[in-house]
Image (cartoon, rainbow, N blue to C red; front, side):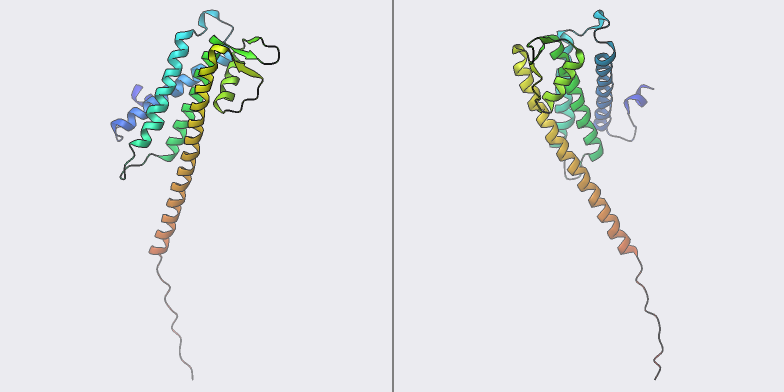
Length: 204
């Protein structure tokens, strides 16, 4: 049951199974963080995250991004290339997990409402600010507290890396798909039998 939940397959390599299991654990953690942020936050004080939770979540997101998304690109060899669809999904999971993880830090150490210069306390505001910072949009309605400026700047750099890798992975997936389509078309033409010329009588 556990092996099936983690996606461990007997036909896959150890590295592939480890990567798939890691992705599923992170995906489950992402769902828990989002559910806590949207449904539980503020209602049960005993379940509120603390600084240790925020640091652990951010460290986990960075490890996942480094191991699954960055390191995988350097281990690609001529006889091995990553599955493009799986690569895109891993980058998306990594980006969403980073947004949720950094939002914990903003909830604990604070963001400031730019209009009235008061601290924003809603968990959804922290999640929104994390997403805006990650994508480097910067609407200006919130700003990080003074103690969180370096953290927000670091998240923006991480977001830029994610978006660049995601664009590259999408183009890589499209190129692989086009190459397969061209190869299939070439095979069909190769196996197609040439038409025989019709016998005609020379009537004089």
